[in-house]
Length: 361
Image (tube, rainbow, N blue to C red; front, side, top):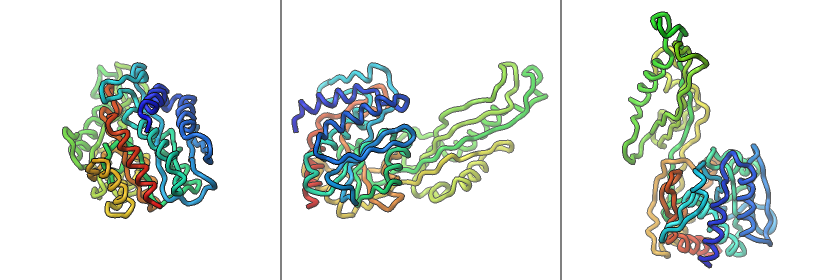
C-alpha cells in the first residue's frame, strides 16, 4: 500500500464538506472514491431522497459473497475541520475517524482483491441521517450478500452487537393565559418538564459507559406565543438507544413503545414514536466472523469483540437475516471538534481486508 498516495487522497476527500445539506458535495465525495477504484468495474448508481449511492462490482450483479459498506457523509463541523492536518500518527479532520478513511481503504482493498471473489463495494451518503436512502434503499432494490463488513471505526476490533434506536416526541398541552395571571392558565412547559423528569427517572442520563438503555433529550420547543404568555403547547424530542434485552423497547411496535413512555408521564402529556429500529447482532462464531478476526490477528491486533452504543447500517442487514460486523480503523473524537484517525491502523486494516477477501477462495 502506497501510504503517501493514500494520505494525499485522504486529505483531498476529507476536504469535501459532504454534510446532509450539501448535495453537490455528497455527490462529489462519491465520485472521488469511485475514481480511486478506477475503471474495469460495473457501477450501479442509486438515488433516493436526493441522496446518491453506488454499488461497485465486477461483471453482472448477482448475490455477493461479501459486501464492503462505507458511508461518505459526515456531520456538520467548523470550516477548520475541513482543512485536514497531521500531527504525528494522527490525521485530524471531520470524517477522519467516522468514516471516510475506512471507506477509502475499503475502496482500495476492493480494487485490489475483487478479481479473487464475488465481492461488492457499497458506498452511501446518508448514514449520518438514518441510512434509509442509501443502504436500506439498495437492499430494497434487491442487493443481497452472505456477509457484510461495515467500515465504521473500531480499531480493528469486531463489533458484533449494536443498540437499537428510536425517536419520539413528548407533547404537553395546557391552557394559554397572561403570564401575570398564571392561575388562569396551565403551563405546558412545566408539564413537559415533569414528563421528561419521569422518563429520565426510569432511564437516567449516563455519566459513564454502560450497556443499558439511554434517553437523550435532543430538543424542546413551545408553540407560538409571547414571553408574557403562559404556553399552551410544548414538545420534547427524544433519541433513545436500547439494548437487545430491554423488553420495553426490543421487539415492540411503535404504538406499544408510545404507550409505555406515556405511562411514565403526568396527565395531559402524550408520546408519539416516529420510528423503532431494532438492535443489530452478528453470530460471533460464524465462519466469516472467525476468518475476518483471524485476518486482523495476523496483523498483530487482538480483534476483540465489541458492543456499539450507536446504530449503524448493519441493522438493515440484520433485519434481513444477513450477518454484518463493524470493522474499521482506529481514532477518536467522533462528531467532535478534535476528531482524528489513527494512521498506524490504516495499513494493517488494508492488509486484513485483502487477506480476508483473498482467503475466501
